[in-house]
Length: 275
Image (cartoon, rainbow, N blue to C red):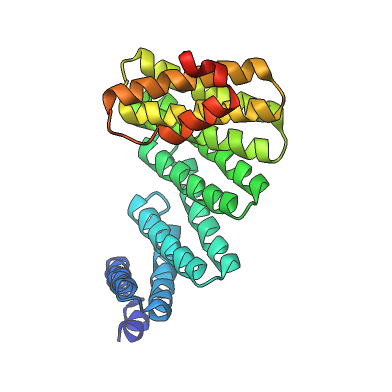
């Protein structure tokens, strides 16, 4: 048994390597159990691996392999508990994963890949909170995610993919701030998202996926302006949305993606029909 080996090996100088091998075996076993939908057994095996990896991480706090593996295990557990309706336990595993990744980033602040992984983890948890209408917690984690990505962009000069991720976080923040009636912050984050989009367009990143994303941003910003009774902002954002619809239709005439947006915009502002 793996468990019986640990006390015997603990005093050996090569114990760290053996610990890792044991934890790696438990990790692989947990993955197999997950794939077989044996959730209870997977949870038990994952926790055994976590206990060893966390001990190894305390000894080697800058070993990113332990960080990545622990994060994967905690997310597996979070997903399993959430699927079974135990949100409180799921949340604790999401938060533990983020804490591990945050601690590593503090020790290795120039590791841009680790920063992007942390930002993604924060985004995932923010999305979970948002789905549960826990907007203030969602805002807290999307703010942290956007802050982390800003750091990553400053370090790496920002790939277009990373900038698009940041624009997505700003868009989500704009919507969440609107839901909590923090309209000034909502407008600010719509503007942040749009600023990134305009910069990417100037750099020639005129892809269909970029156009689709910004159609969603401009449409949502217009809807927000309508609820705030701001006709000028409504008109500006809906006009830009219609321009994007035309560009998307030119790139993909058979796509039905724009239909709902166009119908909604022209229902609200029928005078734009001839734009």
